[in-house]
Image 1 (spheres, rainbow, N blue to C red):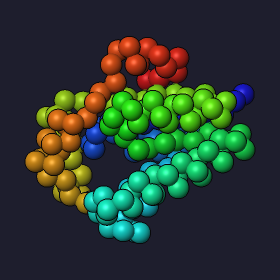
Image 2 (image 1 turned 90 degrees about the vertical axis):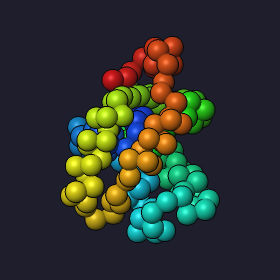
Image 3 (image 1 turned 45 degrees about the vertical axis):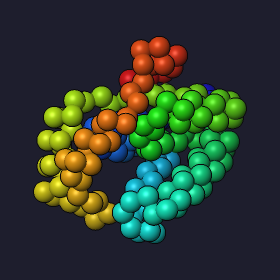
Length: 155
């Protein structure tokens, strides 16, 4: 069977990393979560263009892993439609399957979950304010029904 790229789509608090960890175990996949690398290397935030540099580096690791026949979980969030199109095209160019996981929750539920996480931060996690979450909610481009339907494998 061809390897699979599992693509996580959603905002903070939606459960992306929790699901990514489950997929990692279930499918013996390499999980790539940029925040787990950003904090130790650069601290919180975009850190200039360092996040883009990191995500490009992580993609090169993902691509090589997929070429070797292993599954990869890309836990990026992929808030913009163009990002999802780009990563899907990259994966398909490698001849691998792509499975989309869109975790869609209303802002109120995201805030409840983020608030819970804020009260019990783990190493590498940073608090998120309601203002930040609301701003991100406003720029997030949720996949359309047409986009979702174009993925034969999705949840």
